[in-house]
Amino acid sequence: MNRATKISYWIATIWLSLGMLSTGIVQLLQMEQDVKRMAALQYPVYLLTLLGIWKILGVIAVLIPKFPILKEWAYAGFFFAMSGAVFSHIASGSPLSEIFPSILLLVLTVVSWYFRPAERRITQTN
Image (cartoon, rainbow, N blue to C red; front, side):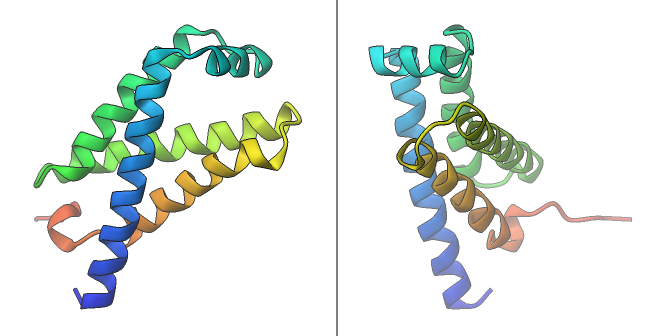
């Protein structure tokens, strides 16, 4: 793994982790604006708790060493959650300012996954 790839991975992964951790905590707190946003998207409020817990656990999975299968599941979860958020916002007519954070986290998920080091990938054995 060359230096540029390693730097790209860690920049994307740190920003992804900070974004997912902060939004996970905010979702667990169920602030009034988030409850209103969920109502506007026609989702139940309890989904905030579920997403918040999953995001925090996903950040832990992505950052800890080893456990490559767990990391793959965490990246998949981040991808599904953020692509679902983007689609939900678009379908409900949200302005770009509300869609952009989800797009950014989706892009960071893909970049972090793509540039992850070999020891963080699943290896096939015969």
